[in-house]
Length: 160
Image 1: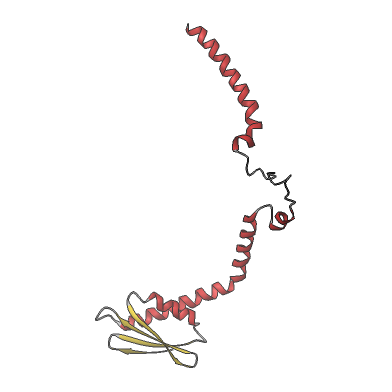
Image 2: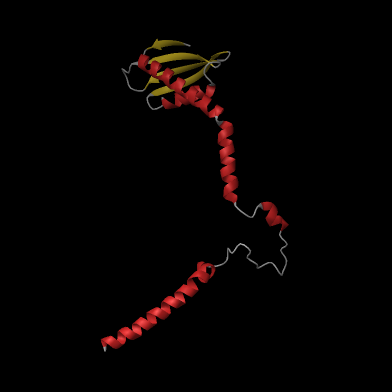
C-alpha cells in the first residue's frame, strides 16, 4: 500500500491480494458524502483510490488514515460473512422450510381432487372460528345462559 498527498486530495494504491475489491468498494462508498471518490486500476491486481475533499481546506491525510481503517473493517466484515455463509444458508433454509407447514407440495399433488372431494376442507381452512371452537363453548355457553336466566327471574321477583 502506498499513498500520495496532493492539493486537496490523496491517492492510495491497494493490493487486491490483501484487500478484496468488494472491501475497497465498501470503504469508498462510506466516503462519498465527504469526498469525490475515483477508483482506477493501477496495475496488475492493484487498485488506486483517489479521494478529493468536497470541503476546501480539509485535511486529506486524515482522510487517508480513515479510509485505511474503514478498509480494514470492510475486509473483516467480508471475511466473517464468508466464514458464516453456510451457517446462514442452513438457518435460512430451515426457517423457510418450517414456515411452509403441512401439507407439502408432494402431498397436495398426490391429493385426489374430483367432483366428490372438490369442496372438502381437510385442514379446516374454510371453517369459521365459531364453528371450529363451538364444541367447547356451546356446552359452557348454554349452561351459563341457563344460570343467567334463573338469576334474572329470581332477581326480578325481589325487585318487584
